[in-house]
Image (cartoon, rainbow, N blue to C red; front, top):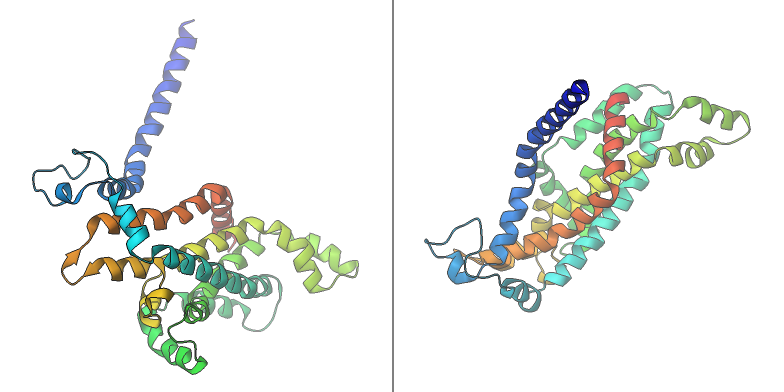
Length: 286
């Protein structure tokens, strides 16, 4: 009886210690979102009052900032632009990264190791060094000040990392299964599509989430290549329209941040397990 009580007490202490260690991480992750929600629901009088508490609502929650954002700005247009750009840019990047990552993981040719490293180093080039030459490319293609300028330029930083990530994940796929398919008469492309690709779904989902998140939150290219209000993304549109000189519409800014983060939250809620498994497998074998 005593042993059972001690065992249960040890389990309780162990669980309390484990959950206690998670509290700082949960607080660090959720506090910005909590602060955005609280700020977006405050009235302007409370927001600019020095006597108000910054971390909770004292005078009642209101939805005026959300109404202002949806009725007085082009927020829904910006959200649509962000969704279209993110989906297209991520799709183009995957179409390039999947065969590139598979080739670097499976094929043997001169310089394959150095080429794989060079692909990842390309991702490390700061965007501030790339947007000037890319602006020349955008003008030459005749797509300046359109959403297509972003669809074309975003893969320049998505493809290198996605290729490197998928290269590591394809190496976790058993080579023997592809060799059996090749012996049975399948081509290398058929082995990729029918054998390697279905087994690499977690890695592909991971690359998709990474690309979608990065393009959704990207700011420098979206600010540089697009100036028309109707073609802006949500990140740039909210910032440009709600910051006018030294006047900051904090309530509507926070409301825009909350609404713009919803698609990302939904994606990670549904695909978090794939994301974690894709990252861990690629990091171990890559």
